[in-house]
Amino acid sequence: GGLLILLTIVAVIVGGVRAYRQQSSLGWFVTAGVLFALTLVAFAVTAVIGLREGLLGASEPAEVPCEKVAAFVDAAGLPAGMTDARCTYTGFQDSFYLMNGTVGRAEAATWLAQFPGHPKLTTTDCATGATICTGQIAFTPKATGGAEFAGFEATELPDGRLQFTFTALNT
Image 1 (cartoon, rainbow, N blue to C red):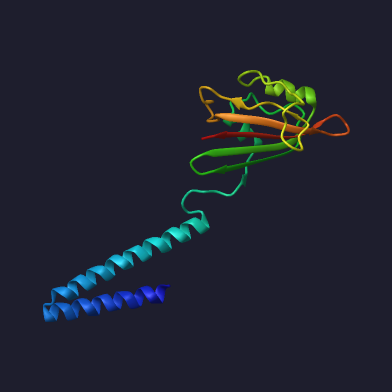
Image 2 (cartoon, rainbow, N blue to C red):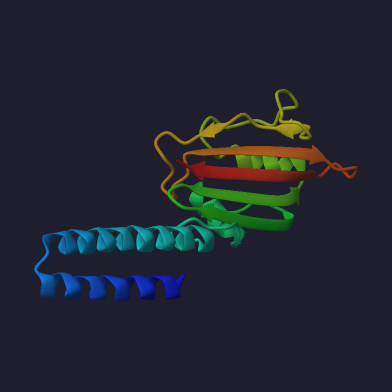
C-alpha cells in the first residue's frame, strides 16, 4: 500500500517536470488526473481503516458500572437486592445500554414502577425465551439521562428470583 502510493507520487512528480519542460498541457491534465486518483485512493484507505478499527465512532460493547444504566433512565438507583449484575454500553450516534442480573420479583416490580406508565410485570407477549416481561417503556419526553425507550425481560429461576435483561436506548 505505502510503496504503491510512493511510486505514484514519484510518477506524478516526474510527469509534472517533463510536462513543464515540454510545456505540454496534456501532461498537466495527466498530472491533475493522477493527483485526483491518488486523493480518492487515500480517502478509501482511510475509510476502510477507520471502519475496521472503530475510528469513526462505532463501538463494541464495553462493560460499564450499572449505575450508568440507572442514570441513563433517570432511575433512583438499581433494583434492590440485585446480584450477578453485568452492564454494557454500545454507542455511535445512538446509545444502547444492557443490564443483566438476578433480582427478586417484588424488587423488580418496585424498581420498574418508577418509569413512565408504571410498567407492570406480565407473562403475556414476552420475547421468545422470556417468561416475564414488560411492554416497551417510552420516555416522552426523553429522560434527562438520555433514554428514549427501555424494556425488561426475565426468566424465573427455581428459587423464584428473576434472571433478567433490562435494555435502554435512544435513537
